[in-house]
Length: 417
Image (cartoon, rainbow, N blue to C red; front, side, top):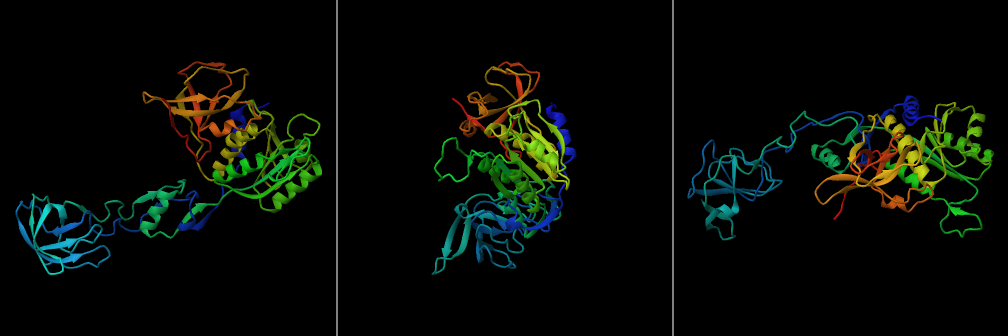
């Protein structure tokens, strides 16, 4: 039986970095940048007004209250650049500053002393002193031209897509998604939730859970199948997964010591190199990792839901993260809210919560319902709490490692009275 970090080292050494591809910015949500993004232009692209009001030329001076100006024209958002010839220009928020104007006075700080018949202001008086340059958004104030605005390895989310659109960047270079196959084993499993269960049958919950988490981890599911307890059916599904282009294959069940636990032998029969089988962890101790002859990685996850969840989060996701070119994940270190006693000398991955206490302190708590067969407690967790092998008793206030539910999902925070 191997230790967790030794197992992780073996996995990362065999996880290849993936190539990059071009992707339209509109389709880049959830992608990982393969290289930096440099701004091709200033943002904003021109000086513009931050307020509805009147554009003036102040130079380096302050304009005293009571100053009067003739309104020479109007400038709305979207209007082309105009050459101002003194006086004041009525201007709207976001409108380009007329050439020669450098200051905006808000409409509520002026008195319109004369209108034309249509209500357009013709003459104004300042109601208060005006500072030079006020209420003007300068070109490049948000992003200057040639600035690096995103780094390699950055996850593209809504704010990143907004900035790409604002800068007119239509394509980005992203890391290709790892291609993953999922094979659930067990003749007791029923995939169709509408199908009535027969004696001894259960519904397949691992399939939907793992498939969803694979996508959230930045990969794509290229093949998914459920097979019984026949090695030949498993081998056939595995071969179909490889034909579908899978680079990582996950199986659930049939990796322990029972008579129907055929996965290790089936993999060896295909010429796979089994790098380890059983890890000093709970839940998920029977986990297996192998390399197939063509280079695909194979993770044999235990069949219990929590065991499969731990196997994916702390073994498969680090491999996917490495393939995406991301650095090794670093946990939060938070104090435990309550005392926790561990019964076994294994590294324990526990469903937990990150909580903001009434006095403003972040802490972690271990949830009840840690049994590996239970699904419902997964809904209550917002984080994983990890207790090391040599920590038998963790007193309240002792520090523990805390990870988000996924490597691309930071731990959420919940308040408590």
